[in-house]
Image (cartoon, rainbow, N blue to C red):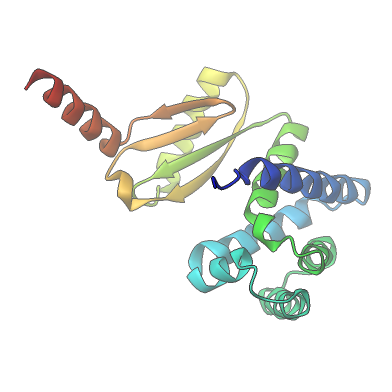
Length: 188
């Protein structure tokens, strides 16, 4: 029996929750503080494999998830709307969709500011100068201010993968090597 693709379901859940959070934050003039808390939580997710596993795991009860999220929020100094949002997400057993909610919130906020959001995957952390140069290059292509979200993935070996809207530009060394390998197989 094939396994159902849950990415569409997760995406829909994430977008609905993110939209609700954004509307609430906008209504109360708290978009910047929610974004700061959201960034703080995302940084914790990026740094902690245990937190990633906890968020993705269906094993924990809603009560355990709620207790943990409250403790994590307090320890990280996350308060206000985003802390309450995390509690609702935990209570509703939707923590698995939290990374998607964060991405969706960023997209909604960027769109509201008239910006375009780009997801960038790099083999190593980008310097501030590299990020600035990349933003300028993307702005020249899109004609809009660009907010970038950088993820480090050493498996791409080098180069970048940039996603802007439905377009993706893959200049990673991994892809170039795969293409070369395929070309050599066809020749040989």
